[in-house]
Length: 485
Image 1: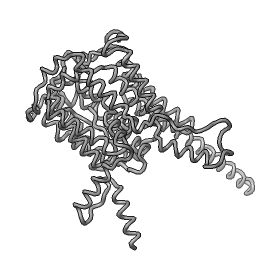
Image 2: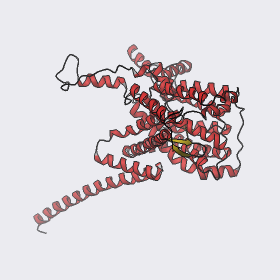
Image 3: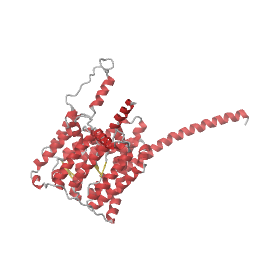
Image 4: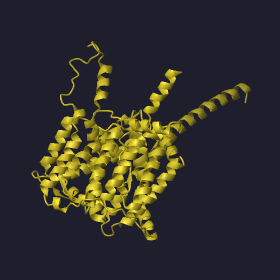
């Protein structure tokens, strides 16, 4: 019985806070959950590198909303820091906090009538209410269980390739985030030149390779080539350990720090524009017209994207990357709802959990909640120290470097679709991805993928039914002949 108690205690210590059952000793249970969620899975340098793995999508959207729509960057940094710390504790994985991309796209791209801050917040709150209700009622878990895997993989593939395409544009062309447009070709030389971007790209590849986990490669070596045995080893092939220990070199963090240093080199005057102190916390007042415009123009296209990419795809990807950490769709959906039901009233950017951000943080070394905790500390320090004036620094950040970070995030997310085992599954996945990319709508691709999957199931069911009917008819004819009918 003592051994059984120890096993239960050990199992409880490795379970995230959201999955823990209520029992006695709540304070001890909470401390155990904190230690479990923030326990380092690899080196501290790897977790630090993973902490900035999703900034390739975070910085451009936050910067554009600040420049075009007047978003308070200081408030957004503080609230997203609190979100990062909370989700790292609750889920125990590097759960990302990303901008709601459809809301941001509507707010930025429709330059003739850009959304106001109250309209953006109303859109975020409307989306939050829907996701909270879907999670609290269990409908999100129902959707997660019954949505076919090839359709989810198609959504992930399209989102990953979309990130990769945007990253290539960031690297090759000058960008005007305020106007949501690409400019001319990026010059080769300069502090934001093509040579700098390509150099950082080669550095990341040299350090991290294809992004495989070293522990996984070690297990594969042991499986394919047992110790002291060369009979099972392919002829002429020797396993070699890389001379560059990727877990000890935070490639993404070094690239980000390089870009941050170049901000001051590109424009030293930004030092004089910085203002110390946090932004003043204010409640956003929203009229009925703000709710109507925000819901119709921004929330309606955001809701299906949040359901698919922020909940369903995140849970599927989490199950692939962290099979020991079960993350429920209901918990993720409620998490997205609660974050925005709190922050949007104070003008913080509407956020969600994105599969691309999770892929990016995993790609650069994030393996536990400690990764997003480090990111939370950095965001909180910058938000409290500089407030909204930090936008001057982000405005000078080399876009080519952001493109490099975004490229690896997109590729890592797209590679999650490589587990399709049959031609039929690949067919559904690729059609779903193609429609999503060409139609610029994950909801449209999802609908086509579901329809195609059902048609293929109906085709199999129809053939099986006809076979049974023919077989039944033949048996009936034989019985009729024997009876003299």
